[in-house]
Image 1: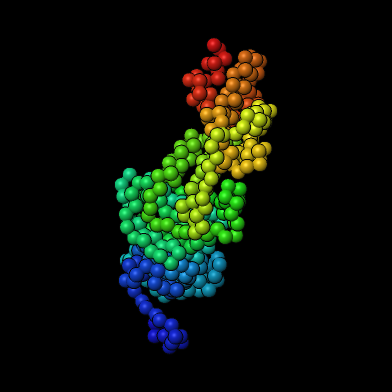
Image 2: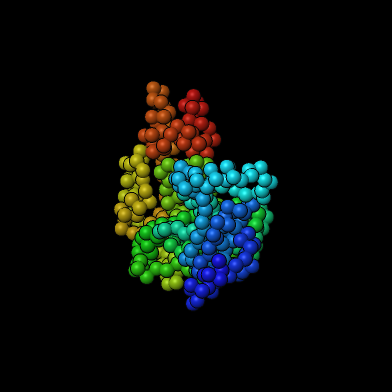
Length: 366
């Protein structure tokens, strides 16, 4: 088969090797082909992973397989002939079910699991949470990294960039995806940058204490299932975006920090807006828009003015409103929760206990 390929395409270079342990460097080939071999591997997932490993970014992998008789009537003829004229009780080597890869859904599942992928319009940060260092192979942007990732190490993959990753042992990591349009919005508002000129650089194993801290705080928020309207997550997202723009994009903007905080007139305007909209989903963008400034600068100057971050003030005011409404014995806690901007009874109870040390029910009885 190799000789035929070389004769028909003399300008190409063709090589063969053990599909489960290819003797080639990573990112070396434009194409990998496996003709009916996928059906004979004891570990087809390993063979697929090896194919992804040796492919260049944007390379193609092709394999042939059998489709079941329900999709391919000719297979009925083959199986019928084998059953009639062959011997069915042979001790064959271990192999996957003969029609496994004839299922398009199964193919997509297996191929996607082997580490080669890309995220459309989202930049990706991967933060290692593994208790022990994990050996990792990564290919992205035409470059390869192979080595240990320890807890706290991060990698950054720009949107639309194909990448491959494979690890040799159990791994734990936090993956943060940030929409390109969000980064563009922060660049435009906080730095007055032209979004068309933004380019995020890929990063392999590196350390960034600020990104690590933000990642851990985001993970904690998710683990606490605080998934409703969340000014806290919006604030963290803005700080993360600013950090990326300043450290990991080709054009590194300078950040101007304004001292002194918001003037009293602007503070009162924001506080009045929050008070009148406590039952609604108040977003950081809404508050910043009141004053015509970026979300990042608004958060910084708001904290300078009153001593706490916008999300902390909003939570305090919602809890204070809940305290007042809990005095009305006829009103249910679910009703009070929704009126104060919480998405459920449990959401109110969790936040109420964190700030007061007791549940809404206990507060009401006292």
